[in-house]
Structure formats: C-alpha cells, structure tokens
Length: 426
Ligand SMILES: Cc1ncc(COP(=O)(O)O)c(C=O)c1O
Image 1 (cartoon, rainbow, N blue to C red):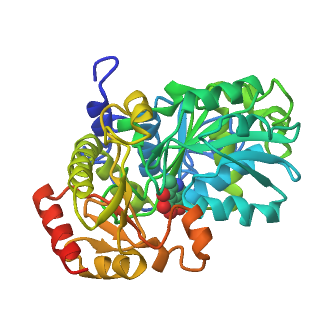
Image 2 (image 1 turned 30 degrees about the horizontal axis):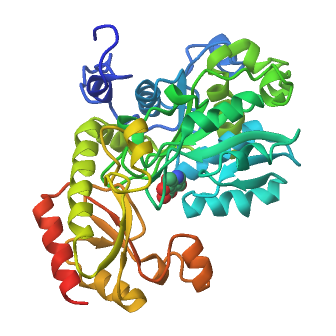
C-alpha cells in the first residue's frame, strides 16, 4: 500500500495481508483457544508483557487483531481492542478509568441500553453518572468535580439522529484534564472521525453499521493516543505500578497506546468478554464495504425523509439531513457526506396508528436493531419504551406517535412503496 492510503483502501486492506503459511487472501478464522509457545523463555516474555504475541483467545487472537488494526486505521487511532459487544467495550473503558466513588458526565441523549448500563449497572461498582444536555454545553462543565474522570457522548445520538458539537465538548474536557469518550456507532468513521475533533477514546457497537449485515455482535474501543494518563495522578491503573506485571507502569511502558493495552491486559483478561474469531471475521468482511453501504444508507434516508415530510398522515420528521431541520448546521459541519440512516417521525393519529403502521409494513423488519442492510422499523411506545408513562415516553423522544426507521440499502423506490402502502392502511 502507498503511504497515506485513502479511506476506501483502508477499509479493505488495513491490518490484513495474505496468510504467511497458506497464502489465503481473505483473513482466516483462527478458530483456536490457544497458541503454542516457541520455548519456555518465549512463554515467560509473553506473560510478562515483554513481547507481543498470542497466548489465549480470551486475551488476543489473530483474526481479532486484524479487525482491531483495521478499525484503529479507519478512526485514526493508535490501537484498538475488539470485544464481544458494544456494551462490553464500554465496561472495559470505564473499568480502566474509574475507581469506586468516582463519577463521569454523560450526554442524556444516548442509546437506551447505555442509559441503563451507566445509570443502573455501574452503580454496583460505585461508579456514578451525571447527565448533561448536549444543547447546553455549560451543563457538562457545571457538574465536573474532583472525582469526575471522563465525559461521554455519542457523535450522532441514537435514537433521534442528532449531531453533537464534539469540539465544544472536547474543549470542556481539555480544560478540566478529562478524556472525552465518543460512541461513534451511528455515524461510523465514514461520516465522522471523532479523534480529529478532539475525542481521546472512540467506542463502537460493531453490531450495527460497521458489520452492517445484522449477523454478528461485536464492540471495539479505539485509543486516540492523545491523552496524558500520568499528568493528574487520577488514573492509577495506567500511571501506577501493576502488581500482576512485576510493577510495570503501563503508561510509561506503552506510551500513546497504553489505554488499549490496559483495557486488554487488565479488563479483557479479567472480565473475559472476548469476541469469537468467527464474529471478528464476519465483521471484518462487513467493514470492507462500509464506505459504499454508508453512502447508500444516507442517500436513501434523505430521499425517504424528504418524501415522508410531505405525506398527509405524517405530523413531523426529525432528520438532520433536511435543510429545515434544527440540527442541519451541525450535520453539515461534522458530517457533510450525509446524516446517517436512523431517524424518527410522528404519525398524526398517535399510538394505535403507530402500531397499525408497523404491522402493515411488508419489506421493513419490525425489530430492535439498527444499521442492517435491510430496512428496519420500531414503534418505541409499544415496544422498547412501553414501561414508561406517557410523560416519560415523550421526554425520551418516544411519544405514542413516534416511529423510528433505520433505512436500508434496498432500492429506495421499494422502500417508499412499502411505507406508502402501510400508511394507506392506517
Ligand atoms: C449507539 C449505541 N451504542 C452502543 C450500543 C450497544 O452495543 P451492543 O448491542 O453491541 O452491546 C448500541 C446498541 O444498540 C448503540 O446503538
């Protein structure tokens, strides 16, 4: 590859070369639990982190390694760690940063599963989230205290499809010496590369657009190599000697990829959410076509949103790609190639109409996922958000009339035809 290859080239080639033993051109699935050592000294140096190499698939595997190198290259980071799911990646990030009693600031507008993980599950570790509003940058800064360890946002927020001013939030993080963690699942590096806008760590659910085919779970964290983990003394896992590695100090030893190493050799090793080699292979295959798929997703979504906006049974459409949308300025600044493929719209006739509409669709699949090649739909009020009161549903952007689409890459005329016949039934 020439120096500085382009994004399309990296999506296909980064991290991969023909298999040195067999010549296989596609990355093989190294379906093995363990790897044979050359001799006892080699084994000792691998266990002591004096040499890089494969020991056991819970910690690292060659198929997983290609996936990691590829995502790190696409995001412009120094290293990455692939794990079993997006949620597992988030757990390992916070495990590396937080101590009991610490807090972090997170945007309120997040994927609902992250709201649960941060607001409920993390309490058992005595880690505390403080919610802030991305439309009011001051709400991030005003909640920082000396136990705050990080700021967490989504670059393009799920479910509303809202763009966030990453640089403004990064400025707050920098001012207070905190790492900015950005979930880039909905945008993917094809649309936005958060490290270029001041993120220090990027995290993905690979389950969505990155893998892109709705067939495998996976997650990844990317080390931006930008944060000084030793300066404040607030990140002891990186800046203090580790007893399990003969007193090694990870930041001093591994420099600008120490964060990814710490997540692997302390988090993944001890909690164990390893990605299977088969899933790593499927996700890698998906990533090869990421640029083509993502552009088609965005183009189809814009056509669909524009069409829905003029439909007599539709009350409103929330899609940042529409010139009239309040979020259009941020979209043009951060994501000029498109506004993503997930957005919500409201039906004039409310709850029953929402249910009837979803049931009436024939090509769209009614399910709780996004980012598949196929077009997907959900009516949050009768499914994911049904336990909430009407007021809570409305506050979460999941009122009775709201429908969420994840627009696929089928022919856009067929997507619109399906929506049209379902709207006619309500
Ligand atoms: C934006 C976002 N982040 C994280 C996750 C969690 O990822 P996973 O389901 O792979 O654990 C999801 C899942 O829907 C998501 O949409």
